[in-house]
Amino acid sequence: QVQLVESGGGLVQAGGSLRLSCAASGRTSSSNSLGWFRQAPGKKREFGAAISWSGGRTNYADSVKVRFTISRDNAKNTVYLQMNSLKPEDTAVYYCAARGVVTGLFDYWGQGTQVTVSS
Image (cartoon, rainbow, N blue to C red; front, side, top):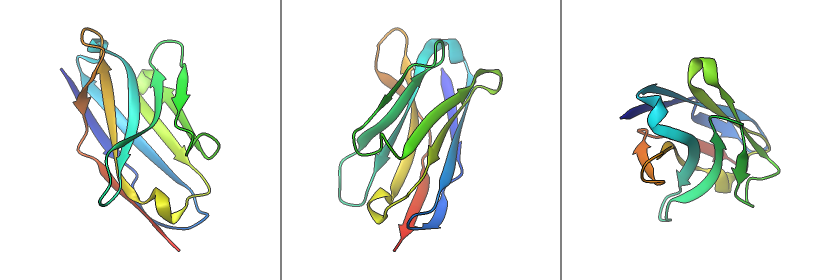
């Protein structure tokens, strides 16, 4: 069981920056990586970035690879998503999710945090 709490969302002007945080608690050993997803109005949820707790290996979607950076602070069980050069199309609810060691699936999800980019 892993509990995830996101924070850092808000309203930002196009071209601006924002940093999202996801704090994990509970049985964090049940997961080996954490990812960020987003869901824009009227669209399906899409993958953004992921990072492994051990080793810090990262994966990025093409749409955010240059502009977004995922990082972690293992001592705080927290993962961050630094978002730069934000565009209106980045507007979405952003979710963090933990991949289960046993299932290999993203079994644990946070409540989401709203990011709105104005033009």
